Amino acid sequence: MSRKMKNKVLENLTIERIASEGKSVAHYEGKVVFVQNVAPGDVVDVRVTRGKSSFMEGEAIKIHEYSKDRVEPFCQHFGVCGGCKWQHIDYKLQLSYKRQQVIDQFQRIAKVAIPEVMPIIGSAETRYYRNKLDFTFSNNRWLTREEIDSGKDFERNALGFHIPKRFDKIVDIEHCYLQGNISNDVRNSLREFALANGITFFDMIKQIGVLRNLIIRTTSTGESMVIVQFGEDDKEAIAKVMDFLKTKFPEVTSLLYIVNLKKNETIHDQDVITYYGKDYIEEEMEGLKFRINPKSFYQTNSDQAYRLYQVAREFANLQGDEVVYDLYTGTGTIANFVAKKAKQVIGIEYVEEAIVDAKVNSEINGLDNTLFYAGDMKDMLNDEFIENHAAPDVIITDPPRAGMHEDVVNMLLKLEAPKIVYVSCNPATQARDVALLAEKYQVDIVQPVDMFPHTYHVENVVLLTKKS
Image (cartoon, rainbow, N blue to C red):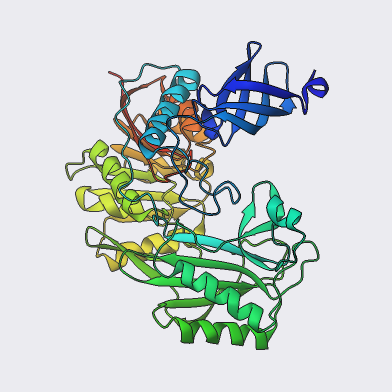
């Protein structure tokens, strides 16, 4: 069936609604068709790219009628770079789709009774809201169909984002609306300097080239971190690049670099060298300082992170005498944020470097009622750990997208804490875990929070209380 349908054009399909992962839904002869980069209300011709017995996937090749809910995308790179897939949809509708996504996941996966889902908390800023971006250097710039058809010669070096599903092709970004402050100036100036000075851009196939990656981090306090990743240990070129950035952007408070000779861009196993300034930047929240080093995780929308943590704290409703377990604590942001209202907070996290940061963040904020431990959650949170620590009155858990390991869920059921606050960046795995926890817990509040405008991603906070 799939071979017959592949590349078949389905004409005049009406896009009905948004489904999970941002895909839109239409129907053809009673079968679901998932389509990317369209809006509910569009009438389109769809070329089938994948056909199964129960559904099809396709791409819109012609739009006959545009949805009344469409808006004009504001970015010149929209539709190519893949970073902001929903710029063509009004933001209020984006929020309603995200809230509905949470409802759908809990109805389809959790299958437990839930109260009416709270109105989603939208982001006050829908442009320039990110505090971190990663850009990639490449000698294999993505050319649009118009550029290819023009027959002209174009500069093939690029600094920007990966084309979706193409690791070897990079969209050259002129202006990005995701990150403000110095981000666009640093990226464009560094590209121009490299081209003018003949410094090579990375070849992802041959694994050669001097300039490999650029990370820019900023904070609401005005500090900034620039990390340049080099693919070759060319000391002369490295010195040229770093000295240029130091001179051109003296306001950068943390100027760092990495020489990465391995086959991927991850930096957790790499030495980070401080060229100028501090080796960290600091974010601030309610007077608390959070130190962010090059390898630290920090929520990439600072304003919404504050709102997210407020929701978690409100749900915990701490009175000052509670023991709180903060699972998947990361650098201890939530743990330190709630510590002043708790008797004790115990944080557990897999990444050892993050636990070092968590302890530092407690120290610089004068908090002496936190304990942090590094280790795999399913191995750390065991009977021995519980015997050596006070039982939790409140558990806050903020796992990665994959959700909690079943052993962790079983331990939570065994602990029987009166209250669990579950923060998630993936409502699907959250709903799966809530279904398991339903053996002893009921869902009291469901609160979606939008961290990433113009994308289909949604954060969700659930308050679970122990059944009587």
